[in-house]
Amino acid sequence: MNTEKPYILHALSPTKFVSPFDVNMAYDSGFDKVSTYTNVEMDDINDLVQDIVFSRHPNDCKKTGLFIAGEDDEKAIEMMEKAKKAMVPPFEISIFADPAGSFTTAAAMIGCVKKLLKGKFKTDLKDKVLQIVGAKGIVGGACAVIAAQEGAKVGMVIHREGAIEPIEKRIKNYKEKYKVNLNAIMGISDDEKTKMSENADIILCAAKAGKEALLKKHFSSAKNLKIVSDVNAVPPPGVEGLEVNFNGDAIRGTKIYGIGALAVGQIKAQVQHKLLKLMCESGKPVFLDFREAFKIAEQLKK
Image (cartoon, rainbow, N blue to C red; front, side):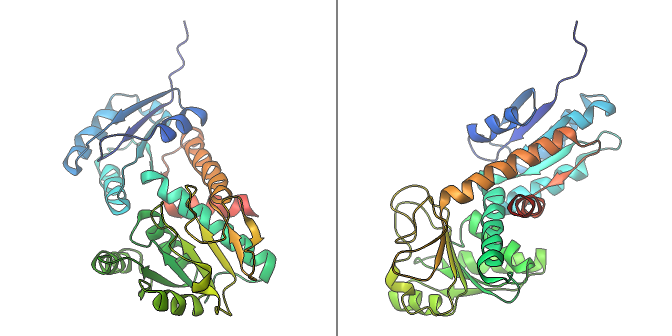
């Protein structure tokens, strides 16, 4: 009889489902079993975590992981912090927060941009003006923090009506939690988008799929703009002229280099795989979010 204890991942979400993508990635990364928990509230975390850790011998806790999904980056980080506090040494497990794949996607996007900056322009993100269209979303929010921590001057672009208050709230929260400097930038009208582009070295588009958020005319007079990246793989592209398979290709009719969703997605999948695998292979508990994801993305892009 096989007495080897299995590697178990407990995946929770405050929403109604855990993504099959995350479950499949967990199996591919070395977990033998995946248990999912949906509609999890913040008040559930303490009991859930203690049930998980106390059901295994301390030696087997290193074969046990907690994955935090959902659709809210700030809630995911809060759940992660609460889960860490619920553990009682030596009953400790690894935790990986990646709500809606946003942390690994953001890490991959910034990693791709940083690599292209170095390869084409012999520079890095320090002091570069980086504008994020779709900053209200969780990918855009994580990109903002990572880029700011790398020294970029980050603008979170308000490109839709009703987004001012949510973005200003995000900026306030990120400044307090991560000690980064971020600014709200208007980008609703054509004139505002053009002005935003004229001031940019880099533009990241993480806007909701289904509509072009930026047109070529918006950056036709942008003399400093070097790179534009988009994470939307669903037609139409978020940026006119930026194809999903671009990986440092010039956008037609411009001198701007594009990074499309497939290039970002390839690195994102590798990052998530490596972090899930790390949970299995580490001899001690690891706690993983967008910061650790970015370190892996950088390694992959070297």
